[in-house]
Image (cartoon, rainbow, N blue to C red):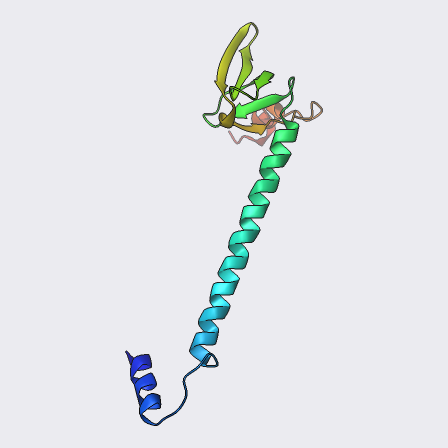
Length: 124
């Protein structure tokens, strides 16, 4: 309300209101920053999606959006379907869009089980 009063006073005094008003410039700068970050995040998301698509080849371990792990067997681009082997001899057919990530194989030299079974760290 104070801004409107200020503008009305300027008009009564015959002053010109224009684009060089500090409030207007600040709003335009804020708008420009918001648009910049929107385009930047959109571009980053597209790049991540393209990287994922190049990694999705038969034989890789994948995880679906619902948390199912398996080995990718085939992809049908026309029907947007994919086949995943979730257990030996068990294949499921899913929509291609639920393939959320390629699972990198863990380093076999790391023994994560020894961290949980270490009796020396327990107090009696």
